Amino acid sequence: MFGLARRYVKTALVYFALGLVLGAWMLVQQALGSGAHPSLVSAHTHLTLIGFMVTLIMGIAYWMFPRPAKEDMRYSPSMAEVNYWLITVGTGVRFAGETAQAIHQHPAEWALVMAGAALQLIAGFIFVWNIWTRIRSVGSQIRETRGEKF
Image (cartoon, rainbow, N blue to C red; front, side, top):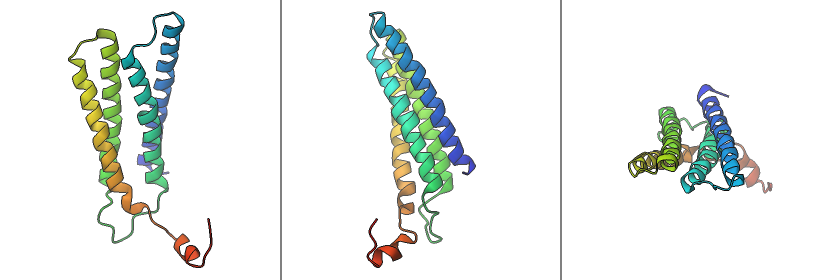
């Protein structure tokens, strides 16, 4: 596993751990009768789904999908790096904004939430654009032509 893919996976694990801690805290709040603030529920969801699952999937896809074809001018390793920073920072900023919103309930904190969401959205589209040409048959096309079923 190359360095950038490891960074994706390790970052995903950090977000997973943060999601576990936040989920436990929300459970304690619920047990004490105060309930979890809706912004904390959203923060938890984004930590576990985007921060953990999506980041993990991106890292594994960059690592395991077939290498770009020699003539592939679309795939860019530098865009994979940009993608990493956008998804990582976007998720962190969104988590900070939604957590702050739950504590302070100040309208200005929505700017952080929206900025984080925008970075996550851009990262998602960059990932799709960058990985698209790497989704291709390598060797299995010959077996499929012979009628082999998978």
